[in-house]
Amino acid sequence: MKEGIHPKYRDVVFMDVGADFAYVTRSTVHTKDTIKWKDGKEYPLYKVAISSASHPFYTGKQRFVDSTGRIEKFRQRYQLNDAASMLESLQKKKQEEKKPS
Image 1: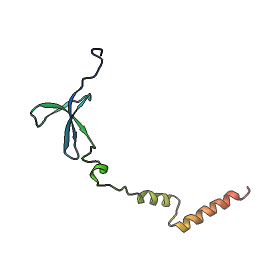
Image 2: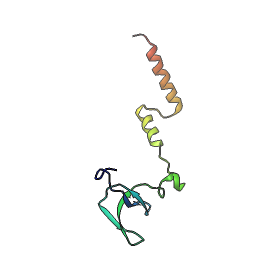
Image 3: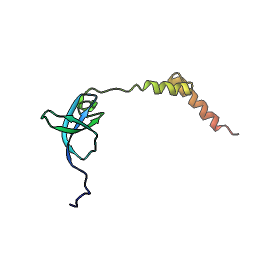
Image 4: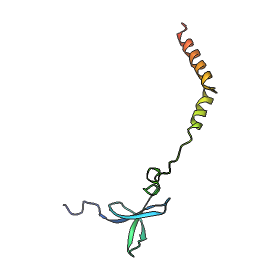
């Protein structure tokens, strides 16, 4: 390997700030923060938003996004209140397109 062209590969603590979970692994990530680990040594600290401790797939706690808001916005935009009026509106639109100008 050539000298001076490769990033420094070292032990780094990755901390999930939302779940208060941390682990040590080797990485080339650049950090400004440091943390004193359980073994008494000081390691660079890299903060992450999601890890296996907080991700819904791994925790089994799925979060459902409220899609009714998007549906209601669509209905309001096109003044549709139910499926029947939606069908009626589409049929009217189709008839208008067939009429010759």
